[in-house]
Amino acid sequence: MIDSGCKADSAAIKKMISLMKTLLAKLQAELANAIKADKQSAAALAKAKADLAEAQKKYDTQVNVVKDLQKQKDKMDDKVTATKVAHETAKKALDDYFKTDDTESLSNQKAAIEEIIKMITKLQNLKAEDDTTDLIEGINSKLTDLQKASGTEFLSMSRDHKEAATVKSMLEEMLKDIKKSLAENASTQAALSNEVSRQKKILADRKAKHSAKLTELGTAKETLKRLEKDLAKAKGKHAERKTLYERLHPDFLDKKAIIEKEIALVKQIIIKIKALGVSCSKSPVKNLY
Image 1 (cartoon, rainbow, N blue to C red):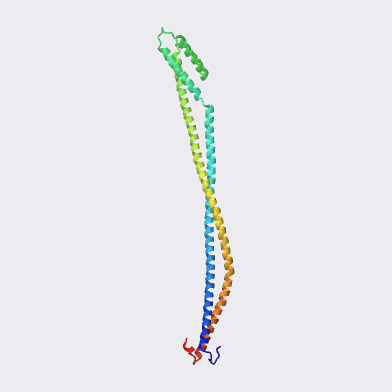
Image 2: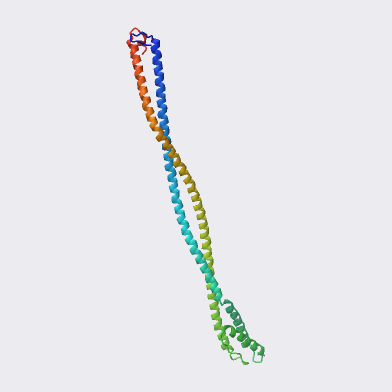
């Protein structure tokens, strides 16, 4: 179309330059798209790597949370077990106390002594001419019953009831001892009962906390399972992106090198065409560029 004698017309040169420029623009656009695609692929890989790191961090953190909760739960297991033992021990101590408790017997003796003392006091206040037969027989009968219950021997009342003061004094001393024993029994029973109640309350509290900790641990384990799945997905996504990038990036580099060579070649052709147009002094082409 163009010979060295500049016989080609300006229209042919214009058309050739236009074609070359179109080709150049196409190659540059193709190169830009290839670079853009490679950057997107690299960015996707970087994001997948960051997502993987974040998923791994969350998983590792939750593993530590579960381990810590498991330790807390194990300690609570030991505390609940120890409290159960303490509660059972307190109950057994109370049960054993009731087996040997003489409160009922002492209370009966106390009531009998108090009644006998009243009867003796009445006897002492009677006049010499008053009939005391029935009262003395009643006192002696009750003294016999008290002797059987307590194992303590008492003097029997005679008609002149000269033994009354001695027996009454003996009964009053015995009453003091019984009241003291009853007070000690009540104190012991209260202490044992309070300990049972205290251990029962502690056990209930620790069981409640243990139950709450079990729930917390269960929730944490469920969260760990979910994060484990998320981590597996992140690993899969990262592996997929990495494989894709490692496969596409070398192709991109080859394609980039080829396109850059083609662009350089087209640019050289355009320069030569322009030079050819300038050399044609009689051609209007020389004034177009």
